[in-house]
Structures are given as structure tokens and as C-alpha cells.
Length: 166
Image (spheres, rainbow, N blue to C red):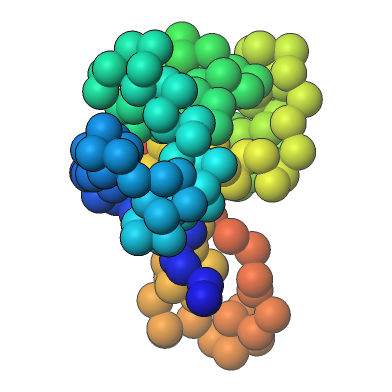
């Protein structure tokens, strides 16, 4: 019988499963019986029990998984703010960049100049998404009054800015 992965449950449900497991163990149920009843492996129940004996229910608290969001970022918070300010307060030609609009390549070049950090386009997309920027195609920015020859084949992306943020 397969059970859903307990790690995908909300934190409150995970905590409840652990609390129930400890209550069942204190009553005298085996790790195997508890695991079958709760849909987890008996070794998981055993690890919970060891943590519970060492530190009580507080030791069973659900913690966020994986690295902290800011651990592996290449730009510091101050650098990100400076870049966002530059994007919202100036145009790319005002900072002597050879671009007509703020594109991923233009912003990456700005970061290279200001911070000395080389950034690939895919990483730029992650930064722009986190900063609240969205990419728009040329056809969604311009009116439909343009001749077909100007609209045809224009797939360049242009960052659009929401609510004063980049």
C-alpha cells in the first residue's frame, strides 16, 4: 500500500502526525504499527521518537527545507537595490549602454559595470522575476497601428515595470 509523501503535507498536518505518533508510542504501540497507521515508514517514527525523547514536542517542530532564499545570491541586497533604482530612474542610454530599452542583456551589462559580476541571461530572468519585472514582447507594447513589416518577427523581450518597482 502506497501513502502520499508526508513531506508534501502542510506544516500543521506534519506536526499533527508527529504529535499523534508520540501519543501512540507512549501508549505502547510499536514503530511499525504507528508507521502503518499514519502512512510513514517505521524508521521515520523511530527518528521522531528519538528526537522527542531528547527535546520533547519542541524537537519535532517542522522546519523549512533547503537553503535560505538569500544564501546563494550573487548580488547583495544593497547591490540589488542600486540596480533596481538605476533601472527605474534612468534609461539604458543615460548610463551609456548600447541598448534602446532595459533588456536582460542591458541589465546584465549594467550589473557587470556597477558590481563587477558577470550574470547569464537565465540568472537575470530569476532576478527580474523576483524584483517584480515582467517581460513583454514588442507587439504587446506597441499599438497595432504599425505596418505589418515592423510587427513581423519582432520577438525581443522588454521588461515591464509594475507599481514603481522594476
